[in-house]
Image 1: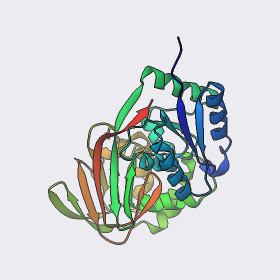
Image 2: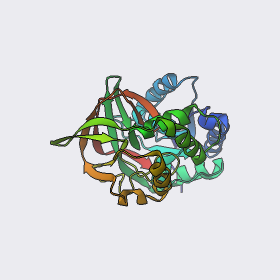
Image 3: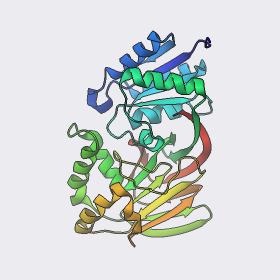
Image 4: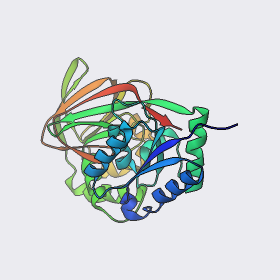
Length: 301
């Protein structure tokens, strides 16, 4: 039995994990080419140039867009695929890899990853998942994972600046180093048709369960339910946060009375000019408006 020729665009982040996995992308390209795939390789010196090149490549409607990197590159790919039905394949090589984790996509050697992508494409193993849209004064950005505001956004910013340690431990260290700046902010939240103002230590608006390399910040979030899970934490002391923090990895923090969950289709958050992060990327500052696009992204699993 013969197969139709396959065309795949591969976007590579050479800075993924600060260069620790920079060669993986090219090995994926070689493994696909060895299997008779027509490959367009996308590597650029900056995120802006890579986004533009990926948008151009997607316009040519390849069979798959492969993102080789971490959550930042996956976020870039999601935005390049806006209004497009080309499926996304993720090869996780970054620090967090949280969307891959939520989808059940594990790290693999390049040959195995290339074969998985082709097998899933030919068998039609493609899942449609929701996409979030966050809008700040800096513009509109799609995301697959979690929007963070408050303390966890500051932790994210610090983790992005760190070169050591790698993986989940980086977020743990960043959290400990940010403890001195722990403070609550007064935020106003318009959720669907209701408005409320609260003092908030930190808040996540989640499409995916995971953030920060495996922390189950929104343990009840589902990638394809057409809703976003808002997880809000009341003002908290540094000592309490140290006991609270380990529970986030298991998702049991939501049982505590200081944690509030709500499921919404859209939310606007305003307050101090705090930074807003999504998928590990800085989107600008509050206010932010967030909505969900149900099953707007096709992902190879």
